[in-house]
Amino acid sequence: MARARKRIDVERLNSPGPVRRSLVPRIRLDSEIVGAFAESFAKFMGTAGFLGWMSLIVILWALWNTLAPGGLRFDPYPFIFLTLVLSLQASYAAPLILLAQYRQEARDRIAQEDDRKQAAQSRADMDFLAREIAGLRMRVGELATRDFIRSELREFLEDLEDREDEPVLLEDAEGSL
Image 1 (cartoon, rainbow, N blue to C red):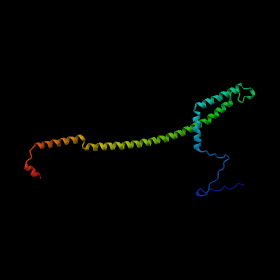
Image 2: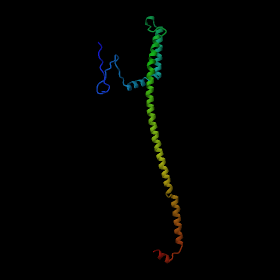
Image 3: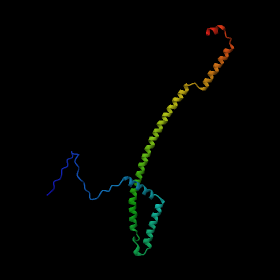
Image 4: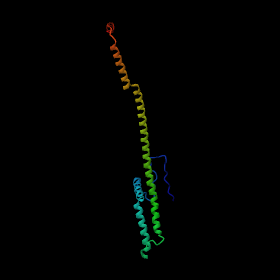
């Protein structure tokens, strides 16, 4: 006898949905932890130390499996197990390196956006200062300069000297009072 399926009312949002069961448990990994691991792994793989150690392991592997007695060899001459190990390493290394590159690209993009904002702010500041300097230059052009004041004082002194040479009439003196 077939069981009747429970009808889910789509209109009702306050009722829980169906429970989904999976045979494989879900593993939740923190993306920051995985990303940090990927970056450290990519940095390590890009060093001369990694290349040296990897070369040493491959050489020892080949020497052991060619020179050791027959019962102690675990990977005979075509080194199929070594090829499998290196392929496995490459299959994990490539995505980790790509993940590290994506994270670096995201950091570069954020830094570039910050640089753009800083450049725009600097440009706005420079434009403001240029306008202020232009305004000050215009105002200074309207102000009396030191040379202008000196020339006016010279003319005034010359007028005073000219007046000292002229005789002062009594009528002029009484009229000015």
